[in-house]
Structure formats: structure tokens, C-alpha cells
Length: 342
Ligand code: DAH
Image (cartoon, protein in one colour):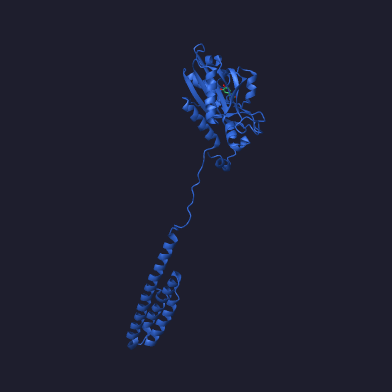
């Protein structure tokens, strides 16, 4: 190959090499010049056999020089491309430390749990322990042992949900009293929070709601102990200046029985919309454990007496956080949870 021819090839290659921008360009250039099948260098070599004998040497050397130039430049370009590729990959993988962080999504306790914990805490401070019982109960624990005989009209007030097998969803937490007294002899001081169920559904009632039951049985326990305990409890649950009054009432399992009212926490007794102008709010039921209930649980009423009370937790949560509709407690709208954080 003449010197001119060689130079022409070299210049053509250099011009093409100058256009290489990426891997694909580089690969195309490589195939075009030194590809095994149809590369330019290869086809020049194939021509060698037709070159006159005396020119073979020069031609061969020329092709070899061209091959050397092409390979060296391709290696250079390869190195440059690899460098750019590496730095692009590094940039892509880099962490931008100036970006604002992502805040973890914090949950909160449900208002019913907050109030339950508060109530349980107060009673633990008074020496009580927590007792629990099943939500699917039988007639004996939910009614019979609590002195609701079969066909007793007080059963109607409970709006019971029955299971097909004759069992029922407990309508109150009072059966936990029975289970506790059947298991142990006095002295007993228990607080029993839990879910209860009734066939009832409106602005203030939900078919599932929460109660907490209290029970104290021992020697010489009086109505005065009940009132003192309830006052200590209510003063801590609401505020120390909350008034407490007991009104005579009826429950089959207590004698005497009382409804317990507190002075309205919103108007402090002056009368407002929430307490219907009376200045009072009914918040729990209570009484002295009926001697027949003690007997049903093998506790001797000539030695022991006791008091019991039951309170709706959801109602306390609604009063405390100003929630107008009980269903808002069970809608699972997270905005409510965040508003009632204490
Ligand atoms: N179990 C009653 C109810 O759900 C509440 C209650 C009233 C419980 C008086 C008591 C009590 O322990 O002494 O309506």
C-alpha cells in the first residue's frame, strides 16, 4: 500500500474516531475497522494475495501500521468512555445529603385506650388488680349468677345478642365479678376493663362498646367505702373539684343500688347544653353486692360484704375529648386520633 493510501485510511479513521460519543458509536467503529468478518483492515489483508510480489512487503507493513493505529486509538477511546461511565454511575448512586428527611409516620393510642389506661392506673394506685373475662359468655355468668332470674324483666334492658348455640355476647363486664369470686375468696379488689355488646345503635350507642367494672369484697365494707372510693377515682379522672352524688336506683346484682352523677365538666354545675341544663351528668352505676350474688359465688354474706360499680369508657372518652358521636370512636379516622393526643 502506498504511503498516500495509508495516510488516507488513517485520516478517514481519525475523522470517524473523533465522532465517537458513546459505547454504541465505539462498537460500530471497532466492527467497521477491525471486525473479524468485514472489517476494513481484514479486507485489506485479503487483498494481499493479489498484490504483485515486489509490493507485498510494503503493502503488508502498511496494513499492519494501520491496524496498530486503529487498535491503539480504540483502546484510548475505550478508556475515556469507561471513565465517563464510572463517574456517571457514581453520580447516580450518590446520596443527596441536602434533601429534607422523610418523617416516620407516628401512631397514637386510641382515645378509648387512653381513658382505659388512665382508669386502670388510678385503681392500681388504690390497690386493685386487673381481671379479664371472655367476650362470649354463657347465661349463668352474664345473668343467672348476677341475680337476673329467667324471665326477669331486667334482662330486657340488656338488648342481648345471642349466639346460635345459646351462648351470648356479654352485655356488660359484670360477669367478670362472678368469674373472679368463683375463683378466689375475699379480700378481693379487681378492676375489669373490656368490650361489651348490645343490640343498640344510635348517636350515643354502638353495638360494641367498652365498660370497666370494679369490685371490692371483704369484711366490713360499707356504702361509705363505695362513695369514698368513687370520689377518689372521679377526682383523679376529671378534676379534684368535681362534685359526686349518688341517686337511688336498681340493678339486680346490687342492694342498695345507685346511679352516680358528677358535676358537668363543661359548665362546672351551672347548666349547659351538654348536661341538658341540669349541671349534672350520669356516669356510672354502682351498689353494694347483693348477698345472693355472694352466695352464688360461695362467699358467705354473713362474714363478707362488698361494693361494685360499672362505667362506660366510651362515654368518658366522649366527655373528656368533646366527641359528639360515639361512632366517631370506631370509624378509624386517623385525624381524630391525632386530635385527642394528651
Ligand atoms: N352492669 C351494669 C350495666 O352494664 C353496670 C353496673 C351497674 C355495674 C352497677 C355494676 C354495678 O357493677 O354495681 O348496666
